[in-house]
Length: 344
Image 1 (spheres, rainbow, N blue to C red):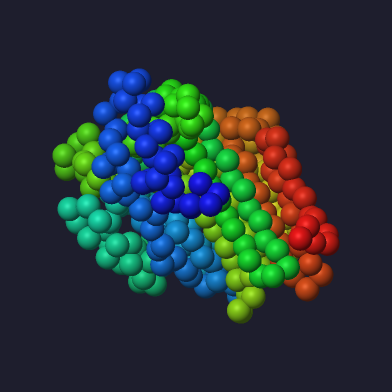
Image 2 (cartoon, rainbow, N blue to C red; image 1 turned 135 degrees about the horizontal axis):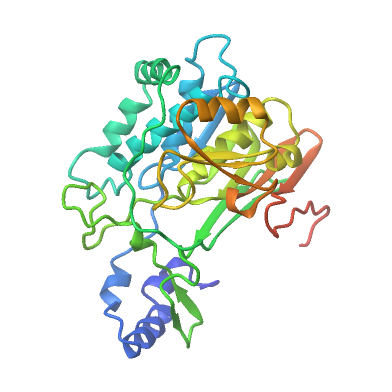
């Protein structure tokens, strides 16, 4: 694979060995299934916010939610402090975004509705203004739930170098050990991201051949003018847009990467697909004013200790004139490193 790239995995010797081993295990995956797929180079979504441009992945990922809520925040009435007594408005924005996700998060190549167009409508200024207006008074509403999923198996890796290259890699086999299938000859563990499909024929995310499921994974980069400013990644299931928003808003306000990933965290609707949308996971060091404002909107708060592993694991690289600064979330066992010099 190092020599042949993606082709070696999907149609070369690795593919042949993988399919042969899976066939012996009773899998119906065929060589034709693998060779019919190819990685896609997609045009990223982006939106200006606070003097920066935030870039993220398009459908079939939930990246648009980050831009939707960051955009709506700019339309809230002056004086609404979403980091204090106005936090209920931010919770309501996320509830609305989560309801939209249930309708839109799907493979745009196979959806019965033009979900790409619907996302463009959601990100238009008039739609963001309406969302902000409603969020000022909106209360908690429960939304669609799916299966109760076990704790996930996702990692985020972010990097940048002095030549101007950067990468944000979000890798997931979904449930712990994915599908539970290990092909012994190649050592490849097969994921079960397809578990995120719906079986409802009316859903744009309904299971179908050759279709990608709606996806929680969403890489993020931020530029200032023409220059890269931050590379950000996180695990966190369906709460990834919320974790990104909290980390980015801290960075935009002058926090260091370490401060941004370590700040008290809360998320609406939990991380898993089966958690109710009126549930808010909140770390115990989130300020009382924030907790009270959210509870006053009718949300149920579930408390966790500071830096709980249950609230996602974010990674940040900052790029500026002084070089690089990296930070890894204290909620897990990641590591941040800045390497000087050349290994060539």
